[in-house]
Image (cartoon, rainbow over all chains, first blue to last red; front, side):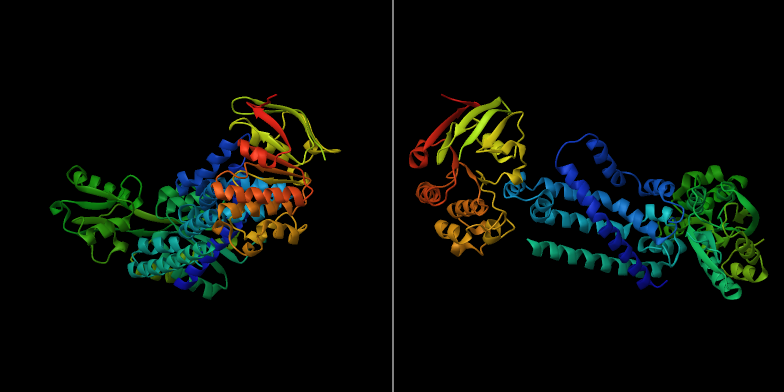
Length: 205
Length: 206
Length: 200
C-alpha cells in the first residue's frame, strides 16, 4: 500500500468516525449539561474512561464486544476511533452547553419555540465554537489512534492498516527512512487538517 | 457475513512481515487464492485469536504464544540465531537487549547468557528495551556499547553460533474458516521455494 | 384582562414565595426590595419555573396548565438576553411578526434592524427586547426592572418608550421595580412584595 493510500485511508476513517460521533455525542453532552438525573455520575465516568485507560485495554474490551464479522475490517477501525475520540467531543460540548446561559433558552421558549427549535436555533449556535474545538481534537485523536485499533482491527495491509500502525511497523522492521517518510507526510496532513478547522472556528466568531 | 471461501487469513509476527509479504505475493500468483495478512506482536496476535478474531494460519515468533491457541496442524517452521552487535560483551559497559522478562528475543538472550555462565557478570550491565529494534537502535545511537539481537535484525553483528533453539512455529488454527486453504498455504510455507525466500531474509529453515 | 394568582407557592433559597393576587390594571407594578422574589414570580407566570402549589389564570385561560411556549406571555428579563448570534431583525422576529411595522415605528428601532445586538447601547437593547416580546402579540407583558443598568438620561428616555407601549398597545403589563420614581411614572396599581409575601 502506498504512503498516500495509507494516509487517505486513515483520514477517511477518522472523518467518518468523527462525523458519526457528533450527533450522539452532542445529545449526551446536552443531557449531561442540563439537568440532574439518576445514573448521571456513572455515565460521566464511562465517558471519561477511554481517556484514562490504556488504549490497549480499551482495545481488548472492544475485541470482546465487537461482532465477529466486524473484527479485522475497516468498520472496526472506525469503531475504535469513535470510542477513543468520544471523550474529547462529549466533554468539550458539555462545557460549551453549560456556558450558554439558560436565560437565552428560557426567553426562546416564551417566544413560542418548541424544544428542538430552542436547541437548534439558540443552544447549538451559541455552543458551536466550543463544540468545534472538541471536534477538532477528536478528529486529531482518531487520526493518531493506535492501541485500540491494532487489537480490534488488526494490521491488515490494504484493509485496516492506519497511519500510526504503519509508522510503528516500519520502525519495528528497521525501515527507518520509510518510517520517516510516513511521519513527515502524516505531520503535514495533521497540520493541514487542524489549521483548516482552527480557521473555520475563528471565522464563525 | 458471507463465507470468505477463497481467502486465507494469516496472522504473522511483525518480525516476519517482509518475508511473509513477499511469500504471500508469490503464493497468490501461483494459486489464485487470496492471502489476507495481519501483522503484529505475537502476543497481540494470540490475544486476537483467543477472542474470536477470524484467523486461519498463525506464524508466531515464539512457542509460548503459539501454545496459547488451539491448533489443528502445527510445525516448527523457522529458526533464528542471536547476534552481538557492537563491542564484545565482556568489554562493554552497557548492553542493550529486549526485555528479558517479556520479549522472546530477550528471553532467548537471557537463556544463552545463563547457559554460558555469563549471566551474573553481564546482568548489571544490561539495559532492557521494549523490543529488539530498540536494542539495536540503542547501540547504533551510541547509548549502549553492545546489543544482543537476532541475526535477522542486523547484518553487521557477530552471529552467536551456539544460540539457544529459537523456533518460529506455524499452524493451521482449530477455529479456521478456510481449513483447506490454510493447509495448502502452510504446505507452501514449508516448500523449497518458500525456504529460499526465508533464507534470503536471514532466517534458518527447519 | 385579569390575571389571577391563586395560592401560588414556590420554594426559594431562603424562604417560600407565597402569593395570591388579582391584577387587572393596565400596568401593575410589583414593588419590593431585591431578593423579595419578584423575578421568581415573573418566571413562574411566564412558565419558566414550576409551581409547588397553586394556579395562575388569565381571563379564562389556565396558564399554569400550559408550557411556557403556549402561554403567549412577552418577557423582557432583567438581563435583556438578546440572542447574541442573531441580528436585531432576526431577534425581534424570533417569536412572530405581528404588527411589526407599528412596533418598529413606536420603538424607533428601524435604523437598527441589520445591526448586531452587541453593538447596541443599553437603551437600544431594551427597546429591541421590548419589540421582540411585542411581535408575538402577547396577552400579557412582563418587565423585570427594565431601567436597571441605564444611566439617568437614558432611564427617562426608555421610560418614555415604555409609556408609549402602554398607551399604543392593548397589552397589560407587569412591571417589577424597586424604584419609587418608576412607580409614579407608569404604574396604575401596585403589589408590594417582601420576603416572598405580599405586604399589605
